[in-house]
Length: 219
Image 1: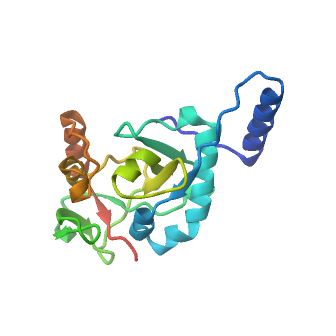
Image 2 (image 1 turned 30 degrees about the vertical axis):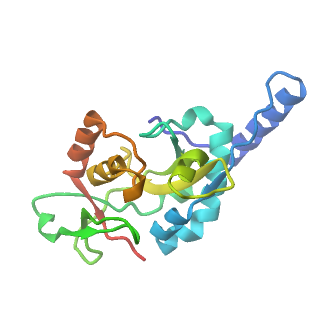
C-alpha cells in the first residue's frame, strides 16, 4: 500500500474544493459515510489507544470520505482498511516483534478466548517483561466492517461502518492470524464472520506469523 499523508491544510483545501464542485454541479452529492467504534474493539484495545479512540474515529471517517481511493477493501468484501499516517500514529508503539533464534525462547503460548462465549484458539506472544524489541511503527490501519455484516454478527451500530480492529503497523501491514481466518470460517455462532478460507491468503498469513509475534497487550 502506497504511503499517504495529509496535512490539515490539504484536508481543508480538499473540503473547500469539494464544496465548490458540489455548488457548481460538477459532482453529485454523496452521503457522508459515518464511522463508529464497536464495543468489541473497545474491549480489545489498551488504555493508551482508548484515549485516542475519538480521534481515530474522526480521522478514519474523514479519510474514508475525502480519500476513498486510499481506503482499499479488506480481506473480506464487507470490510475496508483506512490507513492513518501522521505524527501521532507513526509514533505509537508497534507490538510486532521479529522472531529470532535468540528471542524465541521467550515466546509464550496458550489457548485463549477473545471474549465470553467464544471458543479458545491457540495464541502465542512475547510477555511484556521479555527482553525483546518491537519493530518501528509506521502507521495505523483501521479495519472497518459495514453495518449489514455487523448486524449479522449480532452487533448493532448507528453508523455505516464499525471499527473492529486497530493495528499499529510497520511498513508492511500484517495479515489476520491463521487462527483468525479459521475462526471466521467456522461461522458467526463461533465468533467468526462466516467467510470461507482462502488458501493463498492463509498461507501468506502462516508465512508472516511464522516470523513475527505480538508483544503482550497492556491492559
